Amino acid sequence: MLIDSHCHLDRLVDNDQPGALQPVLDAAKARGVEKFLCVSVSEKGYERMKNLAMPHPEVVISCGVHPLDIKDGFDPAWLAREAADEKVVAIGETGLDYYYSQDNVKDQQAAFSNHIELANRLNKPVIIHTRDAREDTLGIWRESQGNAGVLHCFTESWEMARDALDLGLYISISGIVTFRNAEALRDVVRKVPMDRLLVETDSPYLAPVPYRGKTNQPAYVHEVAQFVADLKQVRYEELLNQTAENFFRLFPAAR
Ligand SMILES: [Zn+2]
Image 1: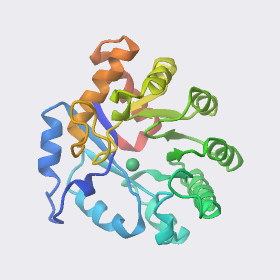
Image 2: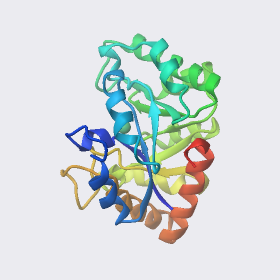
Image 3: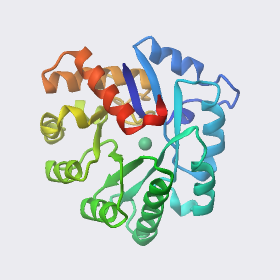
């Protein structure tokens, strides 16, 4: 089964009507995509995202506030309330981004810990965004005794991947892996064990080659999966079976 393990469907459509996502989902289904994990980034956008996802049983959602969105406010009580809903299969995306934002590092760290602790209480996995914050990301994960999670849209070093794998984390690969200058990332993908890999689009961002520069969409997870299968030197079908198995092991409530 081909799954887009990380997309922002609400950012792909302008209107708020139930069924607004249908064309996006249809385009993806035409390429074989059967499941979508639609990932929350802010409290402000959450209600709309949830309402858009609601009519579609093949779309599951997460709840959380992105490290670059906590400047607009982060309310742990809100998160605890919303995240307990059974439709919410994961907590996040949360994490640390020191590349784009160094002036609120302490706030990012506090919010990240809060997400992990809540995830532990609810027994839900965590979707982690990390950029230029390798040591702190894994340090806080250890301190907060993170249980299950994924480093999404992975672009870091093999050393970080290895340490994350040792902590039981999964590694999710986006269309960045198809970019011409991503040789280091391709090396990481070759080394990550098959049973710890996921594929994603992170749409509407980061469209894979040959759509680079265009609006990304879940349909293009096909290109990512094909590319990763080639890197791993396995058949496309095998890659789909393995990544789907991994997805449901990590996100059991998404079944
Ligand atoms: Zn994302």
